[in-house]
Image (cartoon, rainbow, N blue to C red; front, side, top):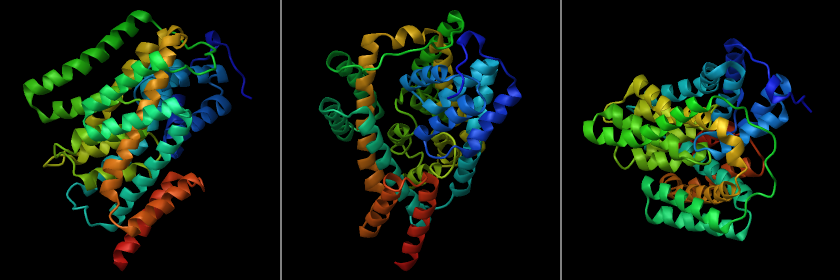
Amino acid sequence: MADQPDRSTLERGGLGEVLGASLRLGLTSFGGPIAHIGYFRHEYVERRRWLGEAQFADLLALCQALPGPASSQLGIAIGTIRAGRLGGIVAWLGFTLPSAVALVTFGLLTATVDLAEVGWVRGLKLAAVAIVAQAVLAMWRSLAPDIARSALVLGAAVAALALPSPTTQVAIIGAGWLIGRVALSPPADSPTGSAPVGGRRASILLLGLFGVLLVGLPVLRSALEVQGVALAETFYRAGSLVFGGGHVVLPLLHEAVVPVGWVGEDRFLAGYGAAQAVPGPLFTFAGYLGASMGPEPNGVPGGVLALVAIFLPSFLLVWGVLPFWDALRANHAVRRSLVGVNAAVVGILLAALITPVWTSAVGGPVDVAIAAIAAGLLIVARAPPWAVVVLTALAAEIASGLA
């Protein structure tokens, strides 16, 4: 086991080494948010020994309790500890840049192409069916293993299907918080260790800025009716309200960009499928959407704006909450509430699997067979998602040619 240095004696490092470590992860971390945690532990705890097991577990607990992409937030936190807040930014850049460049490029290349009848695009959509199904199954087993939480999952799914909108999803998360607080039991294990602590005054200012942007951007959007402001508000809201990581952002972004006509259904699911074939955080899917959406493609500026907007809440929350985490995670009521929130998130993702993922991707027996084989490769054979995406795209292209 790696050494466990005391929190007060953790060594500081330079920006160059933080960039090198995070870029290595950004180029090699396939497999989605859960797999990313394993890559991070190997790189930062075992290989580089920048922090010990207790510190790593502390930071992981903090990031999983916050809305947003847990793996990206974990990287931001570790980079901040190693080289200050600029280190957190550099750590995010290294981990995010490879997949962001790939998906923005994909968005630009396909922005003016009719993707509805393209065989390999159909394969990307079917791969998305399998990947979301795997995520639902894994999260259900982990976050809702008993009857009470399974009932909450099903209730959340029914509500999300009956009233599909971002507002409904926020209300479901709020209901999960309340149900967890009054009716569910917290995890049996007690939190241990101690999270790194920074300046509380600056943290309060950062949390205040998070709230001001969450409330103020919708107001600004209504007042100005400018496309750039609308895009920033949409992705900032998604990054602020998503519990459960990359896959769970799918329904929020779908309801925000597809019904208003910014991105078509085929293009949305094709991009989500492509996001599975690259390493790094799934939230870089926002870069694809920002680059390709609108009557006229937004290009690189739209992709960059979408990426900054969806990840900005992660910086504000991690830097803002870190000094207060010890007290929060020890609070019995907060821990109960988070149990309910997690189950509600699984229900929202289950609803997204049914619609739009399944209803938009599966059109006949051949599609069912391809999606089922892809799911089997992921769940039973434990094949890497990028390989399943490639194989599914090839299978759909071949099936399209034979039809």
